[in-house]
Length: 273
Image 1 (cartoon, rainbow, N blue to C red):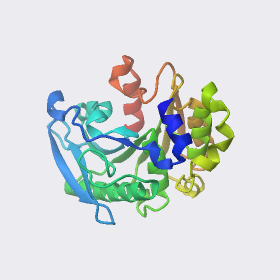
Image 2 (cartoon, rainbow, N blue to C red):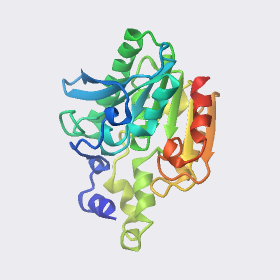
Image 3 (tube, rainbow, N blue to C red):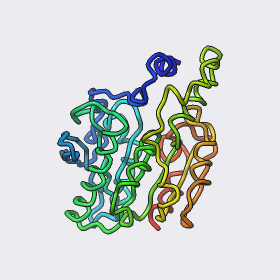
């Protein structure tokens, strides 16, 4: 409710970003070896990420680049995919500007620069660690950011699988949807397109992206309703796409081992292909 009222009062798309600097948890607490990765966006802003190393003795099976959601920072999100290190995957999670140790303030245009920088850094990490399999997992707001960045990323053909998890495809539409959830904000819902800009929403991505895509969404997601995931899947023109609705899963909980089910095994089957 507070978030929706802020949108009404300010009309600012940047309110989709809710960063913090607090350190919530560390990979060491999960007994995962990691290293800090610092890299620069094209405008010179210094960004920070964690590189989580796989726990097996063999070479990593693949690298998963993780675009996290709108709140907190990487230290509150990394655990969602940290379990992959037990299955011979390295995980690179990064913070957008204004989050954690990344400098600056987030905005749709500038966060797109951060996404491109992270994708290019991932290419360096793949080469450095001699990894041949690359998965990009984009969750919640991170899905919007990742889809938009693909329109500018020249090496998207090197991505073996793009996972769009619990995300949406329009700032306008998600604002309208959330406004209609509450009686107090329902009257303002027609103003959604005036209050929130879709200028940095993905457009050509759906027509042009021809890589392998997995779209997944929990049917109990009350933050971003599953209809948004279904719409993304329907809009994608690539012939190599899969739709995975997850029964009983709340927002961004579908592939987490916290869900208490074997969904993570299904997820592994997808990314191992």
